[in-house]
Image (cartoon, rainbow, N blue to C red; front, side, top):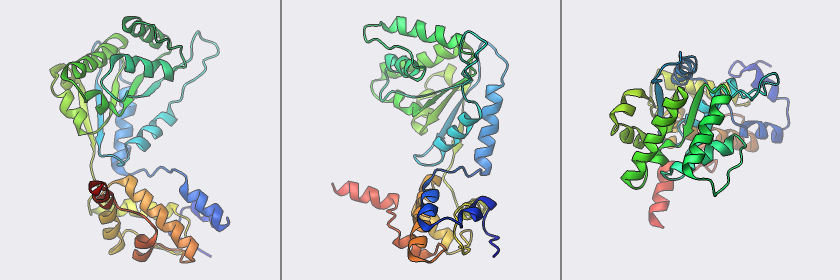
Length: 296
């Protein structure tokens, strides 16, 4: 039997049991849409940028659950650390850290040391931590630093915010590597308050999805990877409109919704996603979650 709506990988999953198919659907997957591919290309350009006194930086900005994490993971997968057995230290082309939950200089250094599996004594002074971080990063052939949830550094008192911004400038200047921040629009607003950082950090936005040709291609891409025996025609009304409305236009919510609908379709023997599957799979749209939270 032919399954023209599916990729070869998805077709091979049809041979699995229903439970195995469901487990496959639950696994994270990469959907390579145009904007994501553009940003991956720009990240590659940053990584390959010639060393200069003031390196260019980037801010990847978007709403929660709109593809930032998957984009970063895809880039990191292409540039893993190397043991470099013939050299004096490991090679780390891309250093990824999560920003501390508040604007804390020591927290930034602690996050870096933890990621590098280095000792992190509480008694160590901030100055000593800073010097040790810079010394270590100079030895590991560092190419680029990624700081996720960077908007956390912009919360709290103004003085602490400025201190954290100065840390970013210091790290970039000392190591001469690009810094990529990942976060919400709050990070852009904060960095614009510092002319030097504003000139070096280029905002790259992952916008919410709207009903257009690119969205239709995205829906077709989702359909190709969900191992259902019947075509759902996700890219056409009324399904496409309902998916966009329920997900509030973010790709992470779309993925969650479509996964839950596909699993529900398998359990009830439908083998395709319909409006009924969307509405009865147990998915709670973000707007409803906010309404529930407001009543608490």
